[in-house]
Length: 243
Image 1 (spheres, rainbow, N blue to C red):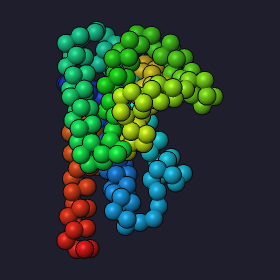
Image 2: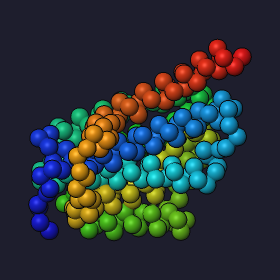
Image 3: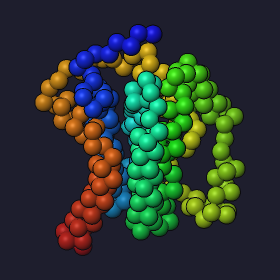
Image 4: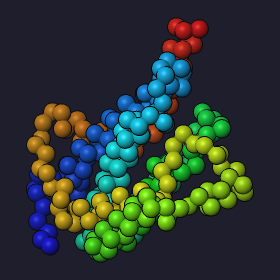
C-alpha cells in the first residue's frame, strides 16, 4: 500500500477535502430530513419519515455517509501515529454533546428522548475505529461481518435494550437511534476505504463544493443547533399563523 495522497485532498490541518464535502452533503440531507420530520410532527403532511420506505432509504444513506466519514477520518488522523491527547479531547467533546442532546430531547420529546443517537454512537465508535487503523483488512472483515451478522439475526442486542427499558428507564421508542450493530460495520469499512484510497475521487474545488466542505468542517455544531432552530420556527409559525 502506497502512502501517496492527492495534495488537493489534504490541507494544513490534516483534513481531507473530499471527506469534508461528503460530510457537508450529509448535513444538508439531514437538515432536509429533519425539516420533513417536523412537517409530520406538526401535522402539516401525511407521510411518515419513520415508516415510508423512501424515507428509510434516505436516512440510511445519510447515516452511512456520516459513519463512513468517521472511519475514513479516523484512519487519516491516526494511522501514522497515535495521539492519546487528541483522541481523548475528541471523545470528550462528543460525549459532552451527547449528554446535551439527551437532555435537550428529554424536554422536546419526553416520551421518545434520545439515549443513543448518532452522536452517542460516534462517541463509542471513534475510539473503536482507532484500534483498527493499522489493521485495515481486519477492519474490513469485522465490519462486513457486523453488517451480515445483523441482517442474519445473529448480532441482536434486543436483550440489552429490553434490560435498559426495564432497569434504566430508557423509552420504548426514540426519535433517533443508531444501534451498535450493524452501524459499527460501516465505520470499520470506512477505515479500509481510506487505507485503499477508494474514496480518492479528487473533487474539483468550486463555489458549491467549497460551501459543502465548509459545512462538513462544522458539521457537529450544525447538527447540534439545526433541529432546535427548525422546531422553534415551526412552532412559531404554528402558533402565530395557524391557530
